[in-house]
Length: 281
Ligand SMILES: Nc1ncnc2c1ncn2[C@@H]1O[C@H](COP(=O)(O)OP(=O)(O)OP(=O)(O)O)[C@@H](O)[C@H]1O
Ligand SMILES: [Mg+2]
Image (cartoon, rainbow, N blue to C red; front, side):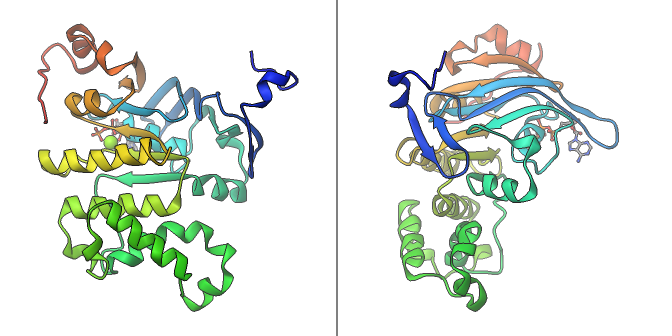
């Protein structure tokens, strides 16, 4: 057990501006008994529990309608969970005040299937918007709509990292889907979140573009230390990129383990007897 009084435990403690001292060996996210009932009565999540280890790349899989998007949206409270506990980096998300929630959300990035960029603005502005949560620290920037010079340099570096340094001044809606998703990833780089929630980030992309976008998520995870929770449809991508897997069926967790633990029998349990695996390489 973790004992903050023991000398040995102190080396695992890191100062955290929001929640005091955090045990670096504890899961970054601990989900316990989460339920979601939508106003129309749909029970989308039925007591789901799992841990997300720090630094991991967790894939959430399951049939359409199994509750994957609901799960991700409950984590940062885009949707309010009906019951259960969501412990993020030592703080209980479900009881945060609006101000505390804003602060917690600065540390949780999101990437969506349809990219969610400001379509009519240029790529650079979209990338810089990853810093909006920190804008309060630069009140003059907010009033005069001027971004600090070091942020602009950082945004160019982020675009270089995702392989589109020449697109900074192009309107977001003038890019291909794969390029738009790379802008969304660059925006996340600017935010420097501890946790990234990705809801089917490659579902709108062709196989080869999917792989390159997954590679950038992997760089975020491995080189920038961002823990990733990602809804994915293709098991071949899960096997290639995820370190852990959680499977949902009808709002319940039916599998938790490593990608290689998904045997043909588990595949049938998760996706149904008739399902056949489709690969993407
Ligand atoms: N806003 C909503 N209001 C009512 N019911 C909803 C809402 N959003 C989702 N649902 C229902 O909750 C269940 C889970 O939906 P969810 O979108 O989480 O599934 P999913 O696993 O992400 O599916 P997909 O793979 O198609 O994206 C479904 O039955 C869905 O119809
Ligand atoms: Mg979904």
